Image (cartoon, rainbow, N blue to C red; front, side, top):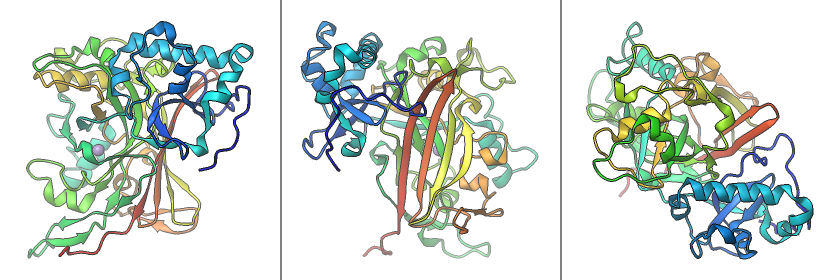
Length: 424
Ligand code: MN
């Protein structure tokens, strides 16, 4: 981590930066000089320390609680509510636009991105994973069940999901150790296999951060759901397909999923994504009334996944889009709370694998290689059915329209070899 001097004046982002004036996301960072994790925004190639911006008095009229930006997670800041978080974001845009008035604040508050270490942006109380891409659910149904009747009967009526594990959601850049576990006995029977997963996969997902709590018993109506969504991150739901296939009956995903998930460091607010709203796929049959909604509830966000082998160059293996989601976030939240399940600030709800209609838009190796039947060739000539030790998997996402670009940066993780097994 280098600490090169910061220019006196504001350094504006390149036109292809994810972190334009239209973005102004929120995250948590630390530096070698000050290891206390604290709140920041990102502008181009600089991380801006919000604790210092506050010290300079620029948020004085917003009456923020003492030390709100000095905390190691954004939960308390987010819990102040959208009127406050929006005002902070708007003030930052004002400061960054006024070169002559506020140029010197930059030298005091900005840190080059190379000198910043990013941390999880929120303390995650609970993490839920949905299964909301029709293309993904159809592909999986074709492979594992009935090619002619791939979707299960409930799928078009329920935003299907399961409760994941919050303790193993890691910030981008955290290595992922290949998990060890049980696999199906061979076709001829016998005892289950055991060892490092042979079918390690990624799942291209996005996740939203809950921004407003509910009480037990309180439902979030679909029309009000956006008030409860603070923003989004990229999400890699790492999956061990052989462990998953053996364990999932009858209660669903468990050890094939809960060893690691990777999130991108910057929470992009729903406000920043407003210009990219779009219609989702038509829902036929019409869902039950509590899941019906009006207006565009999907977002046009370009997504990609790249694999970089150890010491090799990266290859983009998938290009998809968040707009393909069949069930939108408002429906997910309305469904999640229809039984009275309470939400807490910082809870994370992931979309499920985001696959599009074209084979190159499938959001997992399982689908891209069709269970290994159609291996991918990477730029260095090596072949992949699933993810190998030493591979780094990188998710990226951005939205762009009429000169406005808002992006997420990366959610990346390098796969390390499994620990020796069996464990004594
Ligand atoms: Mn998933």
